[in-house]
Image (cartoon, rainbow, N blue to C red):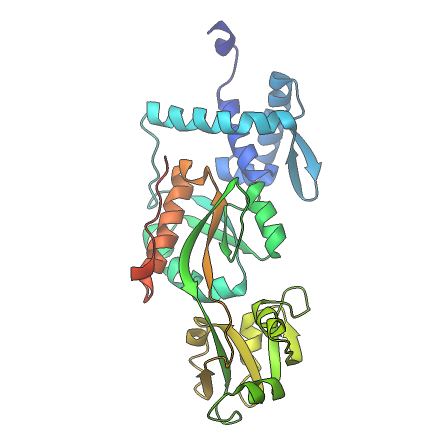
Length: 312
């Protein structure tokens, strides 16, 4: 107890935020502090724990072994402290918080519009900063706390992360109905020119994998890293775009576009939320997870959604 009297317990709040944010500027924004104040607190924390705690890596901070040991213990201390003083809650109407999300433009097209409408009504002080990375980089950034959450397809997520499915997605083909025959057969599909969406610049997704399993290949005329410009390529052209079904809703304004069932089987996939296993211990982050889940559940595929888990 005498040792505790000599410690500024506010330092633990700063450390908790630094462990989550891995960035001095973002920690300052989250805690409504100046960057010099956060840097000064970090200097005191290093002296308190006799450890550097963070090492500079890229544009952020990397945890030392000691910091990794402290992270789950400190998260529990902060959670219990909030319960003790009756602050273990999150009021979205009054909150000012920035959440960092990872998603492709598919998620930005299909999930984000309805989510933002909800946030502007229920939590006008909440902001979302969205970035897109490759799948492996996204998983790493969620695990390291650089991203609060990610939306996408993450088969075989590591054990320290949790994947919450939001909906089951399947593939369709989109094309200009005036340029493509009424029926899309395997022969006409393989003979046509195609648009492929790939962040890496090389087509090697689910469609290519399904074709390779049959010993087939298609003719790729254009590879793009985003879905929106790929959709814009279709009107007035003979190109075919094979994409997740919900993309068709985004393409609806282009009334010349027609949807076709793929003439070969492409496995469906689960689209969902990737988070750290401890994410919902943060009341604010738990609220956002539930808001995303409820937003998707209120759509046409809502009845098939599993219940959103709550924090232990």
